[in-house]
Image 1 (tube, one colour):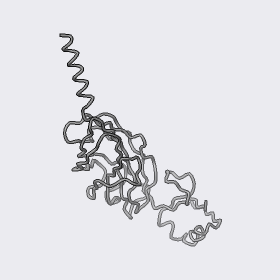
Image 2 (cartoon, rainbow, N blue to C red):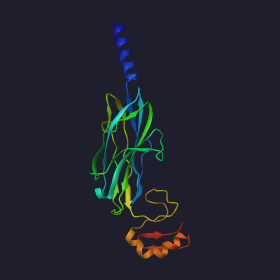
Image 3 (cartoon, helix red, strand yellow):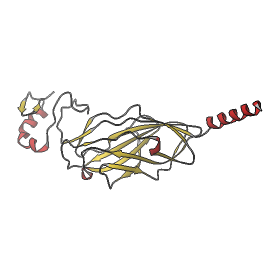
Image 4 (cartoon, one colour):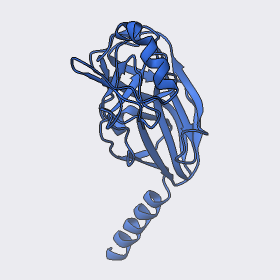
Amino acid sequence: MKKIFLLLMLLIVCILGYSQSAELSSPNQIGDAVANAGLTKKRLFTFQLKMTGGGGTLTDVTFTTSGSYTANELNKLELYYNTANTFTSATSIKSLTSNLGTGSHTFSGLNKALGNGNHYFWITADIAQSIIPNHTISVPAISTNDIIFSGTVYKGGSTIASGTQYLEYVVVTENFDGTWPPAVGLFMELPELLPLIPVLILLSFNLPVIMLIPGKLIHPD
């Protein structure tokens, strides 16, 4: 009897060891940053799936957007994928162009086969040309319940929430790295720039112009 029990336990371990499984994580989550009006492929959120036991077919990814932004400030939400942790060579596998306001969204009908190994995903937004400055958008953490596979795939792991993206009409110095708030340089709203065109021309030639206005600063670093 004891031998039969041990054999059953060994069988269970072997079955689980070779079952399809997915480990969800977000080791390099997107941080706080600025999102310029008109910018495309602005990364909002990233997650990773580590597949074992033969992999599986991903069919749906559900996520939530939050913040003060409105639907008409986005043109598109999109899901990008790569087998390497490199966004520049990632490919789009699904996009949404309607009902883009805050709340739940689903990339459905993906039918993306994922073999053994690591797989990387990014949720991005195309920002509209017309935005309300200082509006925000972010993506809370997703869970294994938000990742759907066809068939039986054992799922584990978790993610963390993204940082906040601040919508702006922006003028920044050339060494601005996208971190928000910027360590150097300046951001200004578009209507404020109209009387400053001569100053901006001087800045374009790297001439030493410093201008102070209430709460704002331009300098040519």
